[in-house]
Length: 290
Image (tube, rainbow, N blue to C red; front, side, top):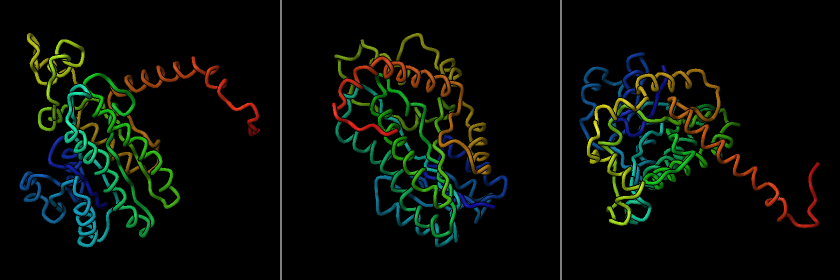
């Protein structure tokens, strides 16, 4: 039996992970924003489900909740940083407050949770951090620039953290799902204040689609185009933790594989085309390593 600590477990992918873990006999500490959302699981599994309210924009509360979970449960074997949300619209349309809250939640919240649990992992000589990112951590498109930038930041920070923590037998997996058939958009989406200048542009069409406002769009059909099965994804995340070893990054969903691959190939092609330019700016007396 392992003990998992999962943030943002009230719905979506995290709730599927939580249910699977409880079904197989593991112990799960979850954080939620709204009390009572997991009462059905608490009634069924009792003390194997530990709950706490957590606002990821509150640094002190993050530390306090993780410390309390450790003291009351005796250990945490796996941290799953899941809590996040999307902010959509043109970069210009979002307010400063919206942007700051997005990064406090998606980026700083994840980093603070990881930083709070690392001393405990080092003390016990093991641990596994599962950071839920997104395929959007590899590209950016109109209407998703701010959400994508939060995931790019997560990718960069946790790639370094994985290498820093590895000598202490602490493993890290960055999970990069594509679209998932959950209520991520409908329940968590935040939109900037729409500007007339963008309404007939690509970004405006994207926002209208996300809000279900495009005429003639069958939303049921649109939802069926989302390829990701949250139960299958939950199963693979748990399997990766059970296996222990594996690549730092884990793409889930055919759309994630295809989008990430295309983004990487496009960036590589653009870089290769600039090789001569890049080398031309080197100092004349540079000493090159053999």
